[in-house]
Length: 89
Image (cartoon, rainbow, N blue to C red; front, side, top):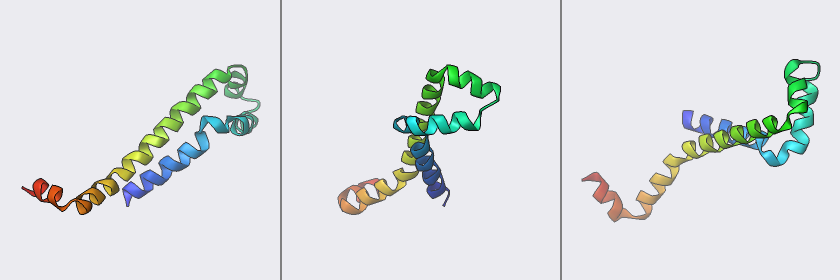
């Protein structure tokens, strides 16, 4: 159950922070942070926002991939019975 939750959170994080969505998400984030020091800094230094978004996107993809590793392993063992017999020895 925890793997499914981790995979879902990773996919949601990757979807929201994908760098290709920055033309939509950057103005939304900057409007939420308007009037704050962080909002003023990010509005003048958009490269920091792009770098942070890319890093969060990669973390989200890693979480999603880590949650799906168990499924791939069980499918290979079922498809190749000889390989699963060798792993049991």
